[in-house]
Image 1 (tube, helix red, strand yellow):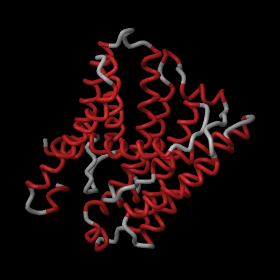
Image 2: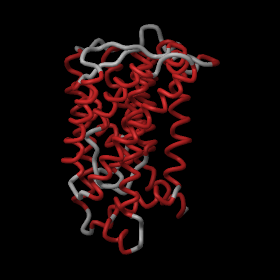
Image 3: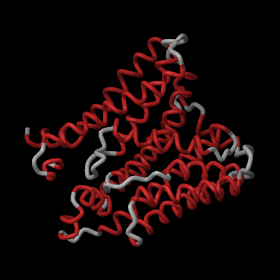
Length: 326
């Protein structure tokens, strides 16, 4: 009974996000004009997976009690770069993909170096570096355009056997190959310790600098994956500041809805993924109920405000900050 109690306390945010998404998507499916067919599921999956990748990027930094406001800019930079180099034969395309992911890692590493060794606040650092990344993206793509390997794009955004969306399989693979090993590693556990109490983690000999640096680098990698996926969906690149800002804001919303604590030290990227899927479903629900699209930001804002408020209630109920991480 004791193990179940602590497991539930640890994962209750994720469980609530999963339950809420299932309910919302079921309502959407039952009320869609054509029902839940393969095309509807694939379109919804592609939109959800894109935001889910950015939400995962934000999560690894938020767990350290930080924030990364450059995730949208890295996404845009990766999108513009991919539209130039993820082309040609199999070898050229593969090298292009590796190059885009490497650039994402370098962007995240730069954030980590400034935050860890420059000792600047994450919010200030990532705003500044985000502007730099966007400037590079604009230099790469002054106007929208470009292309991408069509076979790879179709393989990752289309349907697989039994009409399963390929993007969902890709998302599960990324969770299994990136997040799970990271979560269970020494550095991953150190990340949670740093977010819970950096001073206590320091006195316990936790590698604080390595944990923070790795978190920001991984955030850059996941953001670059999202940028690649944008290219696969759109077959082009665009240095859009609006898109970058939107995905940054939505990533924070998804983190909150997924039960990740903005105070750090608690939560899971899996919860953030379902928070992202839930957030995307809001627009779909408005479509099937024929609501005015201009109302969508209002509903999204109200849901985000409610989620943040519920998370803050617990903060006012505790007398000792350490009770947040029981």
